[in-house]
Image 1: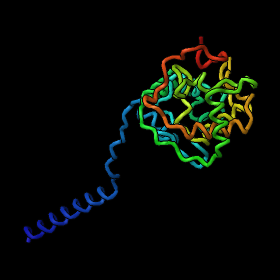
Image 2: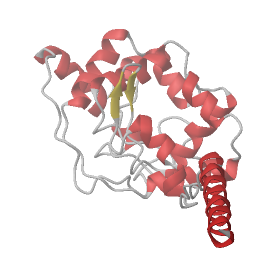
Image 3: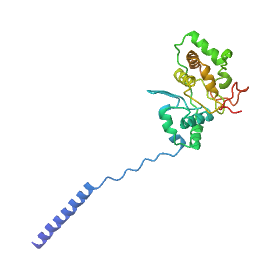
Image 4: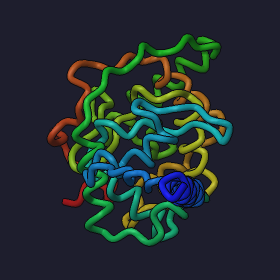
Amino acid sequence: MRVHGALQRGARLASGVLLAAVAALAGSPAPAAEPLRLPDTIAQRAAACIACHGRVGAIGNAGYYPRLAGKPAGYLFNQLLSFRDGRRSHADMNYMVRHLSDAYLRELADYFASLDYPYPPPAASDATSAVLARGAQLVLRGDAAREIPACTQCHGATLTGVQPGIPGLVGLPRLYVASQLGAWLGDERHALAPDCMAQVGRRLSTDDVNAVASWLATQPVPTPSSAVAALPHPLPLPCSALPP
């Protein structure tokens, strides 16, 4: 009987220990998940830019986000500074860069300037032949009577831009080009002095803007598509984008 009683007490003790262990496990938190570790690289940090701009530009509900890849680093840096310092206005961009240092913005600019992605073929245009002809005239020859220089005089004969600070004009949709020319025309976009595009923009009409943007959007991007190292002639206007 003593043996049987001892077994019963042992069984009750074992059962109690088991129940306590189960209760403890049920009430204990699950093991902490390993934190997600992302590489601390400029490519990973630039993903915030690509979320809107895409790799080759993107169209969203708020309008067109221009291509960043392959643009001259000096141009990209100047635009980031302008968004940070209030010379350009776009709520998302102003918010994103308002606390970033010059060094960080230059690192971003250098990263995007180093990228090289192919350009899609130009989209078909619904502009009339007269509008396209006027756009070609302004881009290639300008309008001397109104003191409007040809776009090629500053952006290069191939319109792919000039190092270190003048962007290319080809490979961009009509909507984006028109919106930026319109911003210069309407005194909504500014650059550091001497602000050459502000001078040119004030001489354009809305018809000029439409013509230039329509013609540029029909032009294929040449190969190579990179900005040229220098212009073969002086700029027609002093310009902060290309200091003497």
